[in-house]
Length: 130
Image 1 (cartoon, helix red, strand yellow):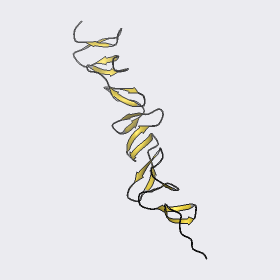
Image 2 (image 1 turned 90 degrees about the horizontal axis):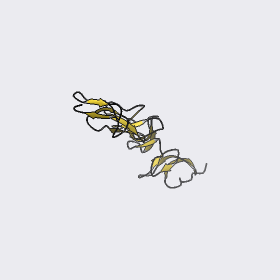
Image 3 (image 1 turned 180 degrees about the vertical axis):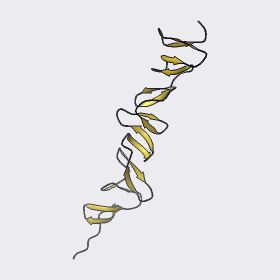
Image 4 (image 1 turned 135 degrees about the vertical axis):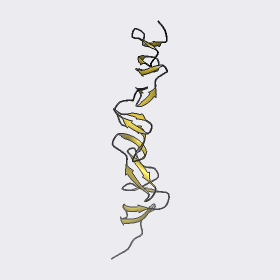
């Protein structure tokens, strides 16, 4: 049996091309990488790349998304299929409606208004008097 050293940046390996762990400063993702690819995040405890939640395109951890997969909207580090009240979907993220909108299509088009305001369906605005 002939022992051969692993090729840097591998720390341990099965062969010259098959790493099983990496030197400090590298992450293991079937090979040694500097950063994890989209859909994975760095797990510092064991220096590996772990899968993000399927709704996340990129993430900080399993439960904290940085950006979302198609069809989902980023809201407070989570990826949602629709935005909550007071927010509207815009380019894969939920943005706040402008007050006094309760629900809106975008930053200027109100669908419903907060209590005390009248909804103008013609021009999608909220008025505090007729």
